[in-house]
Length: 223
Image (cartoon, rainbow, N blue to C red):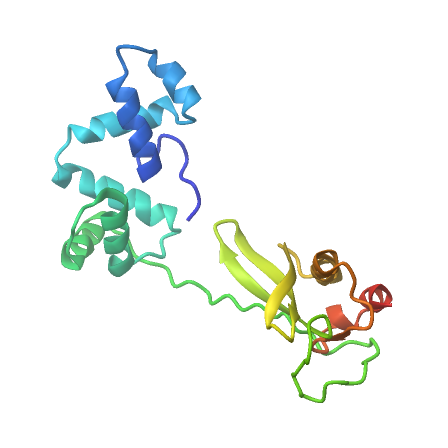
């Protein structure tokens, strides 16, 4: 979830603690000073203060609309129910949320399925021989390394994760992350492994036949 804009009425637990502290110390310090020091907006504080005086029935449509828009109109009753419980401690039935959404004219949008392709085998780079022949066994550390790329969803969007794994211990000894899929990310992951192990001389590196691992840049680094 993206951080809500200041003063939009969606109160995170961390902000609620700050708002409560500001309220309790409002006679000792200026409101504007405390908001600045705690990195919250005055509008957000006063909205929270106002919400404390309103009954739940009056605030519910407003908060559901804000949460619905914040999640790009993709949250249905099930996820809104969990959100309202986690964010505000309100135990609501899905039927009540559905009724509120209907009154507000809120309809969920179908999210397009995100498909990430990390392996592109259709390239013109040279292919190295498979020295392991699917025998993924190592008799000692720093003998065989395996590289792979995956992707992870974060609050900032999709990130690619490149890893270098020691086949002996099956542990990750080097990794790198980036929001773009390019050769540099696997070079950085291998560099991290080299720094940790001090030297990779004589070791075998195994990976898929994707364009990043088959690229001239990565081959040059392996030398």
